[in-house]
Length: 167
Image 1 (tube, rainbow, N blue to C red):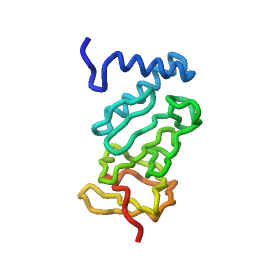
Image 2: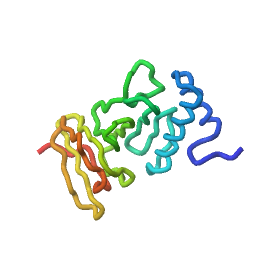
Image 3: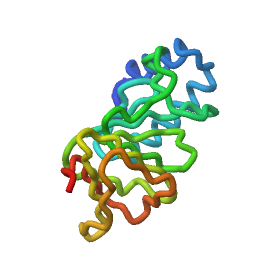
């Protein structure tokens, strides 16, 4: 059996088993895997790390379970939803069903995000984040943490960099 680009078939079946143990039915687990596969296809250098988690250098995505209002990490049954912790977080759609968490203090490629969304700046120490456009020019700097934009537009943002010290 040949390995697929996101891991082995054995790993995929392990993630499916984890989803079933977390209370999803077989059809829900399949629908979730299709969503995860979509993130794996569009997020640069990503890999699946759980039934609904995708890691990328410097962060991760918790993919929302189809039909649920808020993302939750199926590997941790004690947590009812995924949160930002002390990082910069973003949702591609205003429905907030899947959450990106950027923790690495470098420029992250976010060209795969587009349209309406949300970001939360929950970084420690009143840190800010820079957002950059297609030409690499800075187009926006978030206010010091804690700050948020519930009506953000990801379309002009090509890269973002957390961990910018406060002014």
